[in-house]
Image (cartoon, rainbow, N blue to C red):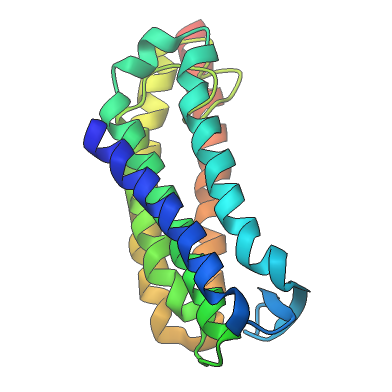
Length: 211
């Protein structure tokens, strides 16, 4: 765990160092958002284009570290802490990767940013599946519905199947690279379908337990 936290802080510090180093080279307006057709449709001033993401990384990390401290079921989070810390590292690394893509674009490199992000998203979804399979009942992490939070049995069954489905989402997302500008649908549709399915699944499982 100590190594994981060291790597996380290394990424955060690296983001600030890169921002300072590249500041003189960046245009006054930096691309900040791309639409589904891979066209830039949003810009922000150079300062925020460089330093917003590093600041967000700090805020995200502090939030993730604080969750196990304030959760009423913090003892359950300790049971899967190694998976949780792995997720923190992965999400910080993912955000850093997105940050690097935006910097490269502003430096004049051109590529399909959606296709560049999809492999990272696929890996993230797959690990979310691993985390979900191992998560124990708590108020912040996992598939939190009124029914999973009311029963350990419903929580465990929902998270076992939800974890497997999120892994499938990761594989489907990566497959979407083969379909050009339609890749975004291979990311969004499976995740939404899993979200709806697991909510419904938890409800019906709870009715079985209640019955």
